[in-house]
Image 1: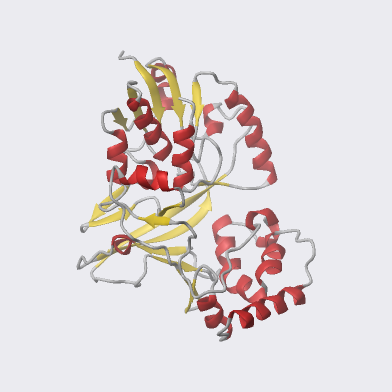
Image 2: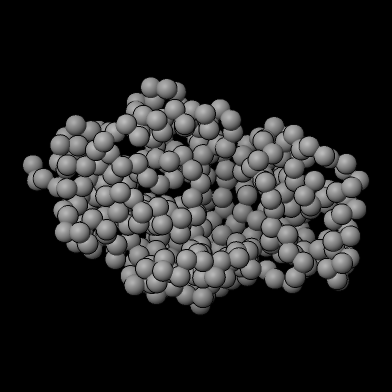
Length: 363
């Protein structure tokens, strides 16, 4: 069997950046992925000339200039700015919470009026020590914003009542007293021109790759192929769930092609009412300012992870945090395995932070 310096399990951003770094050092790399394509969750599927974000919307943003230059050497990023809209019972509100939102909610026109309204609601709630997410949110932004724009969306996303979720999930909420709909405060943001596949292709150029390859189906065989393993899958699965299973949330996508040029006029529309079963609708063409005669939309449904579904993000509560800490101790004892990325570190990661982590990994 061919000998490699690194076997990289998973071809998402962490694995792909590690592969690029290893090859820059003259190392031989094999990247395997159990999916039929490379790219992890940023993989795009072309439909009607539109790059469809198959595993959910991914909007790149960073304030790290060197990182921005790093990704742009593989593919040029466009000027897309994330400005989502919330739909609550048929009315539209701008996100993040800003002067446009406050005007839509209360008709206030100045920052002083908006601040007074929020302060009035915070005082009326009288919450001093928030015991759960609901109390935390109301103590930060008041009852109106919480009930219309946070409660239903959050409960759908987590599958739990806000009163059952820990307060630390929303230590702070983005509130702006300017008419600014730009969701991120980052210095740079955009989408790769031609989709994220171009970024992954650039990072993996020169690497040996194999798709449809499940590491756990032949763990011993794959491990023998390289001196070191970079593992980006589920950390609890790597250790055969010996300490118990970590919990994840998953997302199901209902995607359809529509015979119209423009469905909702925005890439991202959140549905914050509890009665609407999906959390948001993505219209993919707007990420790249598409002018195609048709459009593709995806409705996103959040649910508990079950065997066979994709684990998307960790459940941030005390039990899972404590269990992951035990798995991390086991991971740290593995001298020839590097654990990295969203699943291996049981952590919700923005894309720039994943890349920073991979660039800093001790290869």
